[in-house]
Length: 322
Image (cartoon, rainbow, N blue to C red; front, side):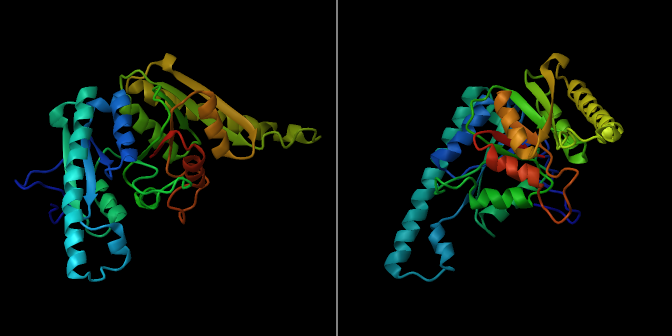
């Protein structure tokens, strides 16, 4: 529950601290079990508390689509039976997920199962819970019943677009190598991404590639006045160097070894999102970390264009949006 000041408290009126908890949105499908497998494989999360979270509906989604149209007595009985069986199945799924995490080294007392009855809608209910000060929200691109040709399910899309304050981690399918690429553009968003990553992998054994993409640096080739741009080019590269040095300092402050930090500057490309995705492939990085919005993004957008494009182009990668 929440008091008049907006502070979350438990049934004993004690303040609830979710700052070390990862909220894991699950729908009970085998696809969402892959999310649990991601937690199993990614070692830095083992010092976090895990909340296995599900929004439960005791009727099929088609019922909501019909605007709660009344059923016949026979139909209502079948729907009730469906709901009972669905609850049993979901309880078993959650227990299986918990057991898997315990076998990976998570402490049993650090894992909580939280199944809530649907209120305003699946996406809205997940956003409401995630907004209670969690360290991050972890989910998959697509869940139960998603069509194969779809890159993102509608629930995940709504959450990514509207969940501002909580980092959103979209689990991919690539094998976890503990190799992370962070996109830098000198914005506050990218610095937040660096700090979040630094705290997450603190004192772990992760390789980090700091990546900056500069577009159109070859457009002046052959131009007699190209020398007039030299001062501007030098200034940009100075800014890049400052940004990368700052990112490296933050990572090392939280325990990442300097030898585990690499730098990559990409120039002469037309699209930053495409270049970031290709760089992650070339560097064999399983995770891409980006700020929600960068330098060029305007307030009318909930999420930056580069971040959104990377989510769609790096389909097999895990993508963290900070």
